[in-house]
Structure formats: C-alpha cells, structure tokens
Length: 72
Image (cartoon, rainbow, N blue to C red; front, side, top):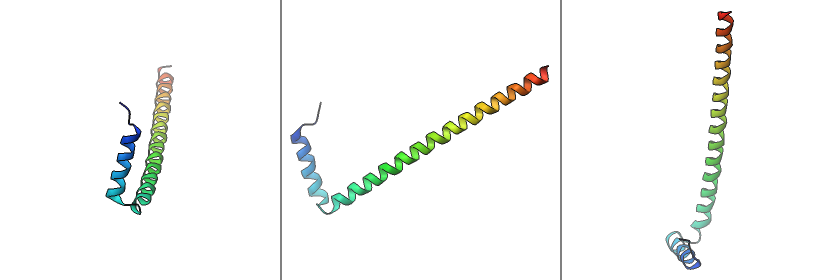
C-alpha cells in the first residue's frame, strides 16, 4: 500500500482547511524544532549510555586485576 498523488492532495487540502495558511509555517517550524531537540536528546542519551558502559567495563577490569593480585 502506497500513498498516491490523490491521497496526498486530499491530506494537504484537509490540513489547509483545518489550520489555515498562516498557521502551517508555524506548525512546520515547531515540528522542525521538536525534531531537532529529539535528535539531540537521543544523541546525548546514547553518549551517556556509552560512557556508563565504558566506566562499568573499566571498573570490572580493575576489580578483576585487584582480585588477581590478591590471589598471588
């Protein structure tokens, strides 16, 4: 199922009728801003998760090294 030209045209007409021609650029700007903020938040979350995983890995390696030294 794909959206054809007629369906896209009908959607555009309905949006124009509901929001008016003045409001659409404002909505597009807000949508773009929200998309940008979402992307930044997602990237920040990925970075923090990677940093947490790296620090946990380093802590585990340090603990293993400490245990190895105690055994010797």
